Each structure stands twice: as structure tokens, then as C-alpha cells.
Image (cartoon, rainbow, N blue to C red; front, side, top):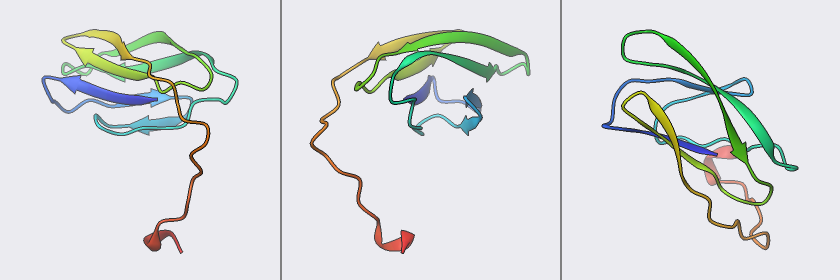
Length: 89
């Protein structure tokens, strides 16, 4: 699951315990499901929404104004394997 904000602004998203900033991604549960998304708007108000995250798909969530929109759900390539980056060693 990846998050963005348009226009770009300082906002935090909390997805299942992970705190993400616009442009960042986190792994959703392998079985998919509805994820609770907490986000803080530019006024400091906290919002609570749910976003459907289907299994084996990348879900892209964009905050436009004060509304969350799911903008893309392309299929994930299950043949790709995660590899260690040189700085992870």
C-alpha cells in the first residue's frame, strides 16, 4: 500500500501501526482485507477511514484535499522476489 497527498503537504498516515509520509509504501497483510487508515489533516484534526486492500494487488491511496481516494490497484507480479539492498547488509 502506497500513500500520497495532492497537493504535496505535510501529513502522516498510520496503517496498521506503520506511520507513512506521502510517497512511502508499506506491505499490507498477505490475505488482503479492509485496513484502518488514520491520517492527520493540515489543521491537526485526526481522521479515521477504512481502505480495501485486495490480496496480491498494490493499493495506491491519495489524499486529495481532505478526502482519501484509492486511485490504482495494479496487479502485483508474484514472480518478483525481494532482494537485499547493498546498504541492508
